[in-house]
Length: 80
Image 1: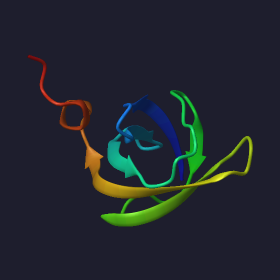
Image 2: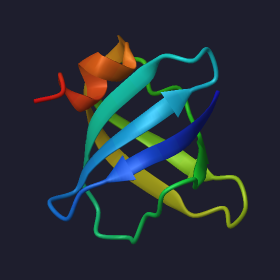
Image 3: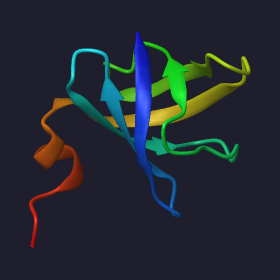
């Protein structure tokens, strides 16, 4: 499944938009640079450690998936 990075924080938190329109919240385990709009291929639908591959470069990234199937509000938090 292709997932598009919506946001990356300096602490390594990553929010993905999945192909079905839901959102995934993860913590990056490795130190490889990520950027917004990057497309990663992988089944990030299990709580725990998962790997995804950049479709453009073939680089593999490791994440701890903290939540999946979330709404946008659930992934980014309620506005203050």
